[in-house]
Image (cartoon, rainbow, N blue to C red):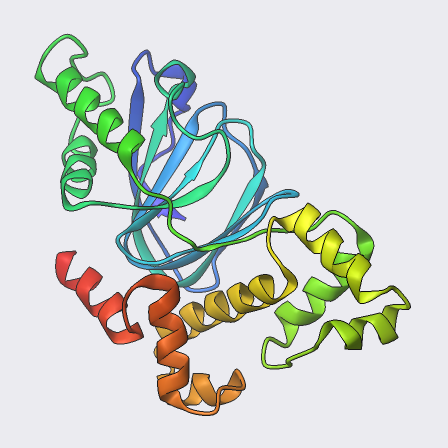
Length: 261
């Protein structure tokens, strides 16, 4: 992804380092990890982040994904992005989550990130710059997690199911279908889904549909076409599902965040 020349975060004797960058659609950063935690904040566009063995996250505009230190992850740009990466030293991230998650970025946190992007790498930790970092870390700690995670199961059996559902989210495969296909009782499959993903089978499938829809809406597809493709009887039924999951209709969800940007 395009941006300023890279400087290793761990070589900076400060608590944070901020980089601004842009990425083109379909750009891909393969699996890697950082010695510092990474907060990837999008002002425009959409990305998909995956962490090894943990699943995937969709990151819409004006949200951020938190990637703790040493967790292997990749990033795929779904729709051209403008973003700011805030790298946070381990000693400053002690109170932050130890697992990846998409977070809601409040107006205050957004402005703090923008202000931090203007700091020199060797900012004054003992002065106003350091106090700004203090407020940023406090606000980040208070941020709410967004329901934009699709957990990855461990077993080969469930990976076959989730792979099929991700490839064809419009197919409403029942547990009975998988019982007949895989020769495993639906009760056993239901138990394994709960144990390995923390979700029921229907919850996982619904989340896969939601994240698929988010990607397509961000790319400009008509909501009516998406609803039809995903097997909804009407556009209003799809919008109702979307609003129940994210608190806003698709139009409100994207337009309101773009206005804030």
